[in-house]
Length: 403
Image 1 (cartoon, rainbow, N blue to C red):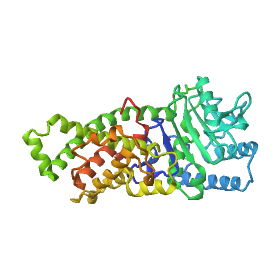
Image 2: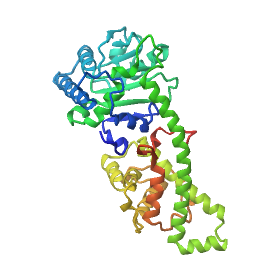
Image 3: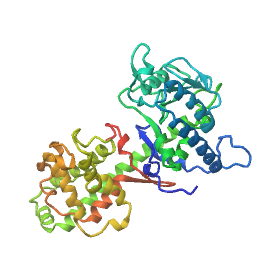
Image 4: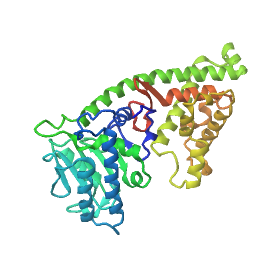
């Protein structure tokens, strides 16, 4: 498997929420080339085993999809066979509600609800003394059992990996859209999922729960995340310099005002900082899907995503051909800035004011900026390099204190 750009978009059927395992670490996992303890039969390569598992998993899912309104019991039965034959969970044992099974002598709790119940929504099936979601039930089980650090929750169409987490306000998980994986033959997402949640990744008793591949990946990802934040701090500084030079090169009058002292250096620097803050705000809000108003139509969301979003520009910033001498991309950003100043229903954007008030960028909102400066700055804010290639900055998972 050739190493390639480790963009989260490489796994369209996976959702990474929080810092359960860093995207860069997931990329390393997804592009493994040796069996690394997966217990392969002689003569089989990792690629062979994943391909075989995909066909088995698809057969189970197709059979499950033929069931009309599957009950919880039907979902549990299919899940047992699906996990055992696709991911190597041959040691599943029934467990008391809210768990359906455990594996590894109780160290891996598994919650199963019917497809009609989304994993994050209250499930009537789990309502013994109170109504709760599959995600809450699993998190509660993980937090209550010292021997269990990692577990799974599924409703037959989605499958979520979670870890013991004391915080109830910052969920962290990796979720696979099984329906999308098997209906679109998304082998890339399946491969990453298989390598991540194969039974061998959870460890075995009598070793402690912390002695497992998942925990080692999490720890390594956290260490790499600290290094990545240090790199990102330097790249933010670089982006400021690039933007400053770009504005001064394209706006002689602005350069003259700065040289003559009509524009104080501190005011100029603060405007550049506010511009970078705006860019970071937009990246975080877009990645967390929090930017649009609740009333935003699908047409408005689509228009924004395809014509004005930073996600669109960030994806293009990796191509040097986009670093041209035109000035149109910053003009498009100005449309977004003005929309967030007063609100714009056509783009589904709210009126935020504050950071987006016109008074925050009195000089830069009227200035020109070459595409080469804007796109290079966005590149510095969006991508990091490591020993294996480039990885996207995970603004979605960035915590407040880190920002």
